[in-house]
Length: 163
Image 1: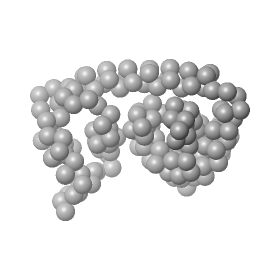
Image 2: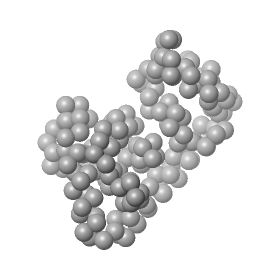
Image 3: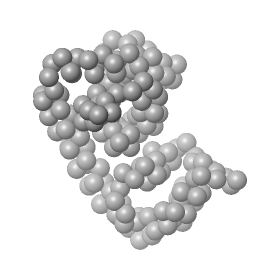
Image 4: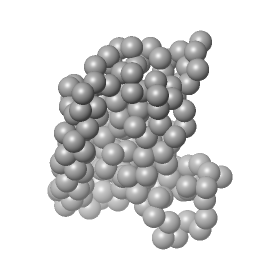
């Protein structure tokens, strides 16, 4: 075991322009010591292969912007393409778990009606289910997606990590 990955540790794995040089070593460090909570937003995207190898910091930002646009378009296309009965069925299955997910956590706490984070979790999981019809939605997927959304605080990035 070692200490959780710190900002200083992360920098040792990055080269010029912020390129990740030693992804395997980074994974080993996290495996053996975890990640400081403030760095999870950054490190989880590396661990979950959101970025193609070798991107600089600027290229990663451009990649995230492009992927966010793709997610928005995908969400709209899938919702429009789905039969109303299918959309209602998937949305209802997702909703059952979303309203119960981490309600004690400050990110998801508060009144259910009009809650922006619950709506983002609902949209993320519904989009995933419609985009993966053979798998669709399975109970408990919200328990995986919720921490991603709470840490990243961005629906599109949480979707990328969840996928």
